[in-house]
Image (cartoon, rainbow, N blue to C red; front, side, top):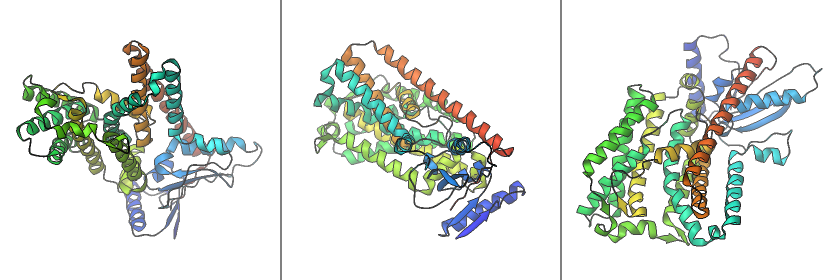
Length: 444
């Protein structure tokens, strides 16, 4: 085990980056490293596990992916307020990096406080409340056929939202997802129309290839040419959509001219649950585990939290940004194939608002629009919540424009909340620099 106490204090930027590279290299060789530092941003790019100490006791603990800088500093500040005002400040804020993830908890709080640290719990409670409210007014909501339709409505948005969540966690945004879905859907459906013997596997590969190629273009624009993501993907949104319209030439491909096996993708059930739902569940769990337990997943959180600190830690910004855009394109390509199977008709103007739906699901699901915080589980739950809301509006006969207003309000409230949290965390960090709080983190 290697214990380092303030190894980068008083050194220049170049030396600091070299120290970070050495520490990362030692960690990859299997050496347990404990890094004690008063720079909260520094260890965001280094830590696998975070422990916050205040006054000799644990104020909080978590893996990096679910416990961002603001939460860490606020935990220290909260613990400080609980101490006797007359007691001398003896703050130790430690972050420990370890390969074994730990649950968020605070020794000063009970079980309820620990559960409230789980962001997804609030989403589950909101989903239950919305579902019960709709069911109380319209009992048909709880019928099996209706719940199946709700699940199917959420699956495609959920899969796209997983890729969008990875992009936003890395502090980027992809506005072209709907256009990529439309392009890959039409190209794959047209190919299958002319090659009905090709098989579903080849169609899925073709759709993913188209989506991946369009994702590579986004990656080049953002990661290589350094065009801001919102500008680059806004441009490709128009280009991809326009290209699909030109390619389609006003044509529409319906399920009647496609093999039955294509529509069976959406009709197949496993254990009574549609195959599309299983796909969404598997992708969500897989992405969640990858984000939590792989180095690439942890690097994305570090990159979104603070790009400068991530670069100091030896994390390749260009490579990871390119990765998330390509990954988003691949998922959109897959959804393009599934879209035709689900709805039976494919043209160049499908999914016109999918980018808004995906971003809304991600943001309301707890992923900070400022990057570096949140989880794909929250994004998936956000997609389910919007599917339930949409179904409830239809069942209750409410004007659908109210749904848009509710979604917009939810996004604004979420963004305001994270903006306030970020500002509050910055104030706490400034206070720590002045000696009112002396944060120290340890990483192993």
